[in-house]
Length: 616
View 1 (cartoon, helix red, strand yellow):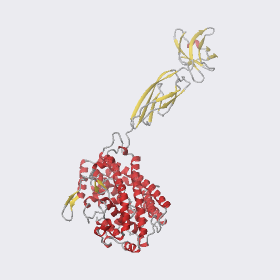
View 2 (view 1 turned 60 degrees about the vertical axis):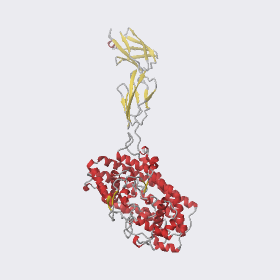
View 3 (view 1 turned 90 degrees about the vertical axis):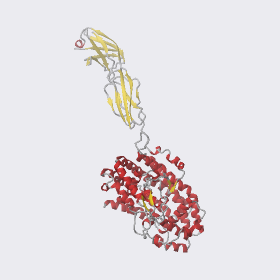
């Protein structure tokens, strides 16, 4: 129950806030919303789970060509057309004739000058629309490579930042296209006559079967002279204009479950048999029934652990979709609200237009980054699942694909679209595949770079440390982004910090080694450190009556002590920095005749001399 409440709250806050801003100024009849499919249903866990799983089925059993099929209506979709389709009272929203009828009805109502504005818009936008289609290819290719295991050498997988950036750029382009359309649509709305509004109002709240049955023949004169791309655009515009006129902010924000994660070939599986077959109805339950093959282990296609790879994505994407501080539902609401604010009785000022455009583009970038992050997780999970499937499981899933994409039309004509053999720009075949080279020839930038192997290096100060006195500071200078360090100072001392300090007690030359370890491996380097005595003994002479030692040298300090074979002599008399006298009881015992001993001077600051060999 708590999860359902969170969905309701997220949708309600976004949409109600927008409604309170008074974005819609159309007649009351035009603002009616037909109960039915809702955004709450679209973002529910079950709808998202089966939809994501359906995308996984598509990409695992498909190819890049199939991934490229993308309905033009999914571009710049803030007009409520998807809501209109999903809530058609005639239940014809997913019939191939749905768009044709509503677009022709809208074009029939518009006069020639109004249609000319749509034609001019199409002429100006075709290049942008096509660019959007081509710009989808790098992401599709990268996801294809990941699923196929064709990643750059040494790379661990996709680069999240790069995927989000590429998706963000796409959505900014979508935002620009949406803004330009909204300006023209709103301008045409202001020019509608009373009779035109009456004709449109008569359609509002009714379904496909109750609308006028206008066809392309009825509007051919208005659409003459258009290229194929321009014709598709104008038909799309006309359908969008009617749904925007008939809808409200709720329908504008609405999206179907498969609105996001559009790079995997799910649209091809659903739509391929319908291409060129007017009147063909797409199975609205296909996504749920076929998608369950990957998220429900009881269907017999995947194990419970494999199904969890897909099912867990519902939780992974929840914040980005609707629950986070920045989320897709809110971004769509902000964009839809800004666009609908252009529908007004008077034309907006230049400043108002600039403000709307700035909002749309900024929120589109945010929207794209969110969708990019989700797709990063989708593709990664699909690749993991593909790697975990046995040959038998893959064959069974491929058979499922074939059962969906092959059959016989109502007129008895057989069809089989199991294997897609041509790339698409939206739903149009790309005849010259070389056009794709700039977009798919190199997609390595969408993958994490191979981690560099560390090259160990270090420096130390001071260059001439003194035994027992100098604190030697070692500075890591390794390259290759190491994350761990292992030092050995040559005297038994070690450290694991990046920049350690160490004190050598005994003069001498020590071999210091550093092993630097990172994602790309490890490297070891060794270097010698020469530790000088803090003071020196240049000579030792035996004195008598009582027995003593006269020690000459340099840098002796007041308070220093003398050690004989490591044992402190009781009495050391400091005469100067160059002379010490050693006397005291027990000294004779420390200096046995004929036996060499090692004499060391230890200054009070810890500095010491090198051992001096002396024989009595």
